Amino acid sequence: MQIYKGNKYYPNYLEPSGGVTAVAFGIVRISDGYWYDFSDSTFKASGWTTQYQSMTENQNGLWVYASGWTTPNTTGQYRVNYKVTDAEGIFYAAGEELNVTAITPQVYTETATPTTTAELLTAVEAAIKAKITGGAVASYRIGDEEIRNMSLSELRAFRDQLRRELSAASGDTRTYARIDNPT
Image (cartoon, rainbow, N blue to C red; front, side, top):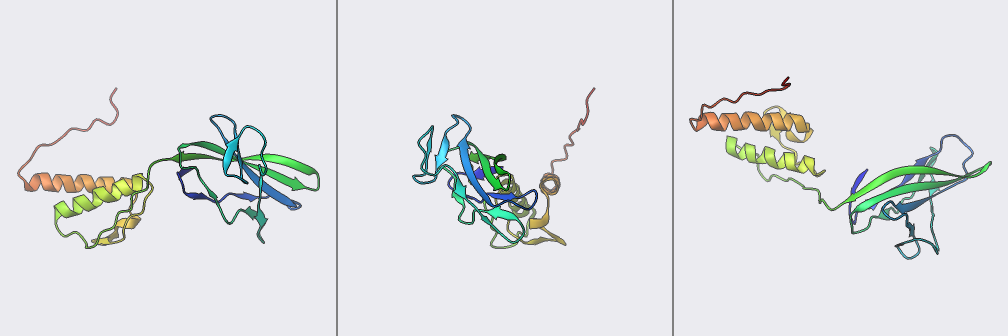
C-alpha cells in the first residue's frame, strides 16, 4: 500500500472467526528490521516501551486503531504486524506492507469549465497528472461526461483526441503509424 510521508495510516484487522479477545499492531521498518516504539515515536532494535499498540473491536469483528499512525517524514518501506489473542493463546499475523513515498498528491481544481480546445487540453492534462499522483480531480462536465468519473485510460484517449483536433486546426495534417505488436 502506498502512503505519503507524514500522513495517517489506519490499521485494521478482521478476525477470521469469533473468539478473538485482543488485537494489537506493530510496525517494523523493512530496511533494518527496527520496530516502532509507540511511547517515544522512534524505531529501535530493542528496548521498546510500547512495541505493539492496542486496537479496539467494532460490532462487526473488525479491530481498528481509530487515532491512526502518522507515517514518518522520510521515505521507506514498513510492515504492519498483528498480535492476536484468542482462547488458544497469542499468535502473530503479517499485515500490509506500507511504501511511504515523498510524492505529494496533486489536487486539480478548475474554477471555470474550459471552453476552447486548448483550455480543455490543459484541464485534461492536469487531471491526468492528479490521477497519476493519487490526487483528486475536480468535478465538471465535458458534454455528457463528468471528468471526475473518467478513468485514466479514458482521460488519455480524450487528451490524444484533443491534440489531434488542435493539430488539424493549426494546419498540421501529419499522421502517425502505431505498431502495437511488432514481430
